[in-house]
Amino acid sequence: MKKSTKVAIIVFIVLILDQWLKIWIKTNMNIGDEIKLLGQDWALLHFVENPGMAFGWKIGGEYGKLILSVFRIGAVGFLIYLISTLIKAKAPMGLLISFALILAGALGNIIDSAFYGLIFSASKVHGGIAMMFPPDGGYAPFLYGKVVDMFYFPMFSGHYPDWIPRIGGRPFLFFRPVFNLADSAITTGVFNLLLFHRAFFKAEEQKPAEESTQISTESSPESSPEAPSED
Image (cartoon, rainbow, N blue to C red):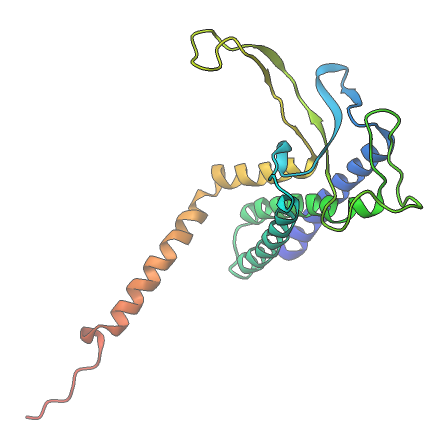
């Protein structure tokens, strides 16, 4: 099987799982509803909608959401180009899997931002289960949809020690962010790159230096053919 086919399969599987889960959550739960995973209080499906980036982060302002969506689309274009280049360069499959996971995650969240506002009615806290393809239209225009998040792992809570400046005595909760399968794919891909494929980044850094050295060598008088002697 070609590497390009394997990459496409990975992206497709992650996208299908990500979108299936999001659509199920969106059409079966109210905002804030929870379902215990394996009967544990610290492992939950907790439905929230995220107007911004991964793990609930966001860009403020009227055009923040649009800027983020356009950035995501640009990042996806770059990732497709990068993966194509790596396949032609016969890069190892482990490296390609990492970028395939990042690409799949980015695409998964782009779908939410681009289309969920068009095809769903708004989800609400009480009695607000969304309808797919509502007769009155969706809740937001193109590129202004909200990303569906659902994985929540509040493993333990407590208070910061009093001796810590500024935050001493305040409550804390670990792990607070709510995320989705697409976020998990991006995080897994990035960690895989950092842990097992750091040589890729070193190689990328060395390329400009090698190209510069080659150019200077080619343009050096010492490298040019010697002129014929007049003797």
